[in-house]
Image (cartoon, rainbow, N blue to C red):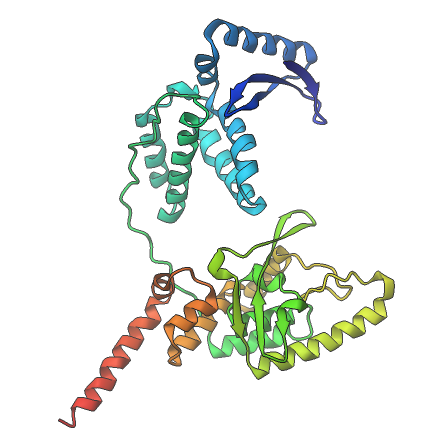
Length: 375
């Protein structure tokens, strides 16, 4: 069954049922042209291809760009979180469609994909990002073989990730003087409590902005990280589960943060009374004066403007690094810090803060040296 239709952008599209895969009917949706006549002509051409060549040959004759549209619709939209989906769409448009979209799916060979990946290295992308492109390339073509049967062999199967030296990303930590300056800058702004929570807990930006009062236990002195707030478009936000299972965690907090939270809650109640029916009750700890959501992107931009104005490097994530570094340098247990930060593995904590752990190793030897001098 086929149909043509016009979208709000004024262009005509067609939709064609291409067969049944895993017991489900699958459709091919494609741009047909600027006019209905062009669209109908394109549709007839595609139908003729199917009738002449059969399902497998026809489907494999589509362009890689068209296959990616199918992959997006039938795999990504079903299996990915909205934020992950958005990031993967950006990757597909920027790399796969731009570089390979014009190829016929069946004509993409291992040598083409090897060149594709090598070009990313030459373009200067980081090893970690190329690794993401590489992994997704494998998934895209694996799906084209099974369960869809668009092609018989996977051209990405034996492609190897290029050997690259990852540029060691130096962790940026705030000095005491910089922290004092930032405390003054944030004071009395609607972002102040977000800054304080991040500094005292090491929580991520989305976790701080998504924190609700039902996850704050003043009496027993802890907060629960159960959700993150993400911006997914202009004035559109979603609450999702944190980054991974280990990120759902309980963080013990001290008296200083407890007192800040108590004072903040009192001020919020006053604002709620003043705004009356105009107050938007989202139960968020970090919110505008009228209770409305503060976009994480808005806070990021504020931090960027502060960095430019104050003359030293600052972004919100540096509060997390500063929190962890201060704990490590003060002798806190590395395993406890891992749990506090929500790292899936202790190796992540050790690798991220290797500059501190090396210093601790030296201090450990110094302690031993002082002890053995008595023998």
